[in-house]
Length: 184
Image (cartoon, rainbow, N blue to C red; front, top):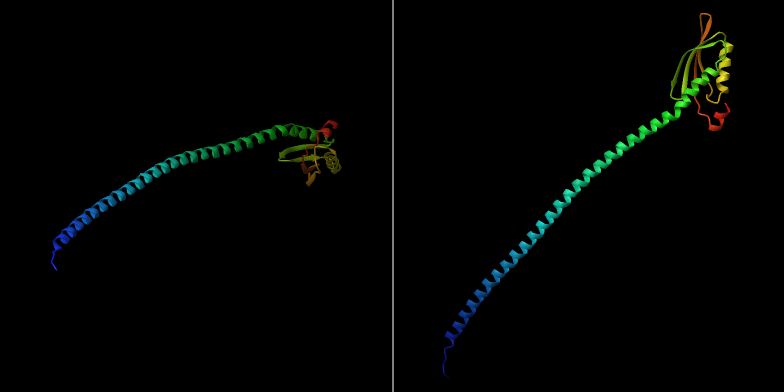
């Protein structure tokens, strides 16, 4: 049999394959590096876009927070104004009541009694006076209780002062209904 040396051809083919493998490995590494770079670039781009969105949202949230504070301040100011308005309306509504109650205090005053001091605190009138007789104080209390403008009077003290009786009286002020006011 004849001896043929195929080694040179095999060695050349192996060298060629090794060379081709090295080129393919370098190309694959380069291609892999490019893909990794592009993916990293894409993620960086998306991260930057998201940071820009977050920054925009934070700015808008800050604006809305400022508007919320302003709304809260306006609500507080509105509540204060409504409280003032209610207080003014209440004062306007009770103004005739105050005048009427003091006018009624004069109307129920029997002969022989003198008022020394009248003071109104909330819905009560504190009254200090002098009477010639104890019966006059009783008559005053009955007259006050009979009026639609007052509740039951409370006599806190009666004392002898010279020739007169000195007394202190607390009277609750009532607001009668409209039809009762026209009757008196």
